[in-house]
Length: 106
Length: 397
Figure (cartoon, rainbow over the protein chains, first blue to last red):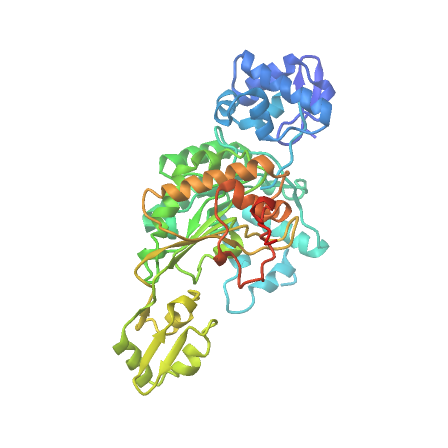
């Protein structure tokens, strides 16, 4: 399993770069991943709104929300979410929020 | 053969038919990934287990679909297929290419991927097999520069596809190519950015022969048809008879609704329009004499799919006849209503056919604003799907 060295801690990630242990997540880690994975130098209020929403949902239900629900609850349409996170809600936003890789069909 | 590293696969090179093993071995001379792909498959044949890991999220910036992640679960033995992702590239309507476009595509794929392709996948896309993660974005960028775009994957609108239609076929009742292109352009967001409960496929056939098998393979199937009578050229009918075609036995006898009568003394074929179900049998048998009618459009069917939550479904008729002319406003509006209805109600990974099965055709028709009509059922009282709403039932008492 690959790891990323972040400050003093080693964080285990899967082959797509998703953090394996959600407990290791911090806001600093999100900023670091934003730079590394999405090329984002800073995270705006809207970025944090999505990230915190995803974390809260995951902590409550143990899975990532459906994309429709994410859009509805944040009030952002999907196109805007792709503007915020160019890799998209799953590969971008969920990764930054430290959620395990969402499963889906090809 | 004793020294071969792939004795099981070698069996598939025998015989006179084309062999993917042969092709992959040839590709392996240039591309180590093709060689490891064969060796991994040999191991799968030996152990009777697949060695691809399920899932994986890879993609290109701005898109959620179009690339499918594939990782080997034995990267220790097959390092060149450690990452072997698939691109779906949106095919042109009716799969027409210039040879130079194909060369361009293959040059790009030789540069970034394994060089192996699959023309075409079940959705109709060009499938480019096997690229490492770091090559995905540059490969996509170069494909885009040359005018190619990715197709759908995941829970989105899958790449619409259509038969060759009027470009190559005299039976085409609608311009399948233009309609397919229009739908693809209209729903770019739905195609590239998955947000639905599951996949949604649209396929378009120009006539009831349904050459793209849309009725079995698409959630929304558009099949060209006509609503007047089959066009008959009486002299050509007589010519078929003179050439020895058994019109009574082969044509009239095999008409599923007995809509045809043959008068041998006058060499005349009589067609009862109201009995005809547009099965195409007589037209296929006598193409020089019979043609689809003049008043043309399409039948829309919903819910076709392969077995998942429920068994395999064929599409149900929801609109017996709709004119199909640019700008196709009526169809596009109906599609939007259908997408919304499904998106709001479906459980995760529930296809629209399964949702209709669960909630009932009555609810579907009512909510998307379609009237129930007799063409939706095979014959009176053979109606397993439609139940009247309570307020529509009037007591006789």
